[in-house]
Length: 211
Ligand SMILES: [Zn+2]
Image (cartoon, rainbow, N blue to C red; front, side, top):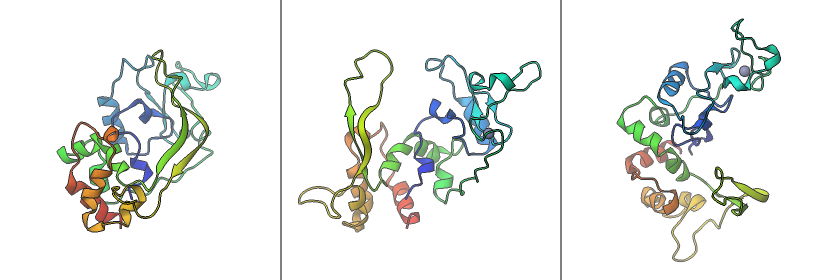
């Protein structure tokens, strides 16, 4: 299975800058900062500050005002690790072929993989998300809002698909496994499909290495 650590964002996105969310290396971070610019999405600019304890990145506007001073070159933020008091072990390295694919500075194959990473991640999901979604709040004014009533849950069907239905989610691991790649590609809902077609050889390599 793909790990949740790569099921994050398909595109370079402002969400990458959730403080504490970055766990890659510094080279990758620099590259990310260099090629990411969304002036139309934010008026805060890039999150140019880094926690000296855990390397979480944050915006100047998130600083602890009482403990920050530009004159003294000290910008403090402690919602990540409480000033070094909380130490979270680094996540395990990604296994191959995931490590080679999930890179922003790789070759054409990894670039294509990163552009469609959400779709690849969906192919390996056991369940679908269920919630009572309130769509009335999106009336065209303001940014889209995702609002739910009650609790988020997972939908899981029977182990085998019902007659005439293609296998999906958990069923993909059990039903007609000799055609697993094709089944997975067919299971992707049209609304989840991106502009590019997925690469069957990538899916096959991920299947092999998830066993
Ligand atoms: Zn920190």
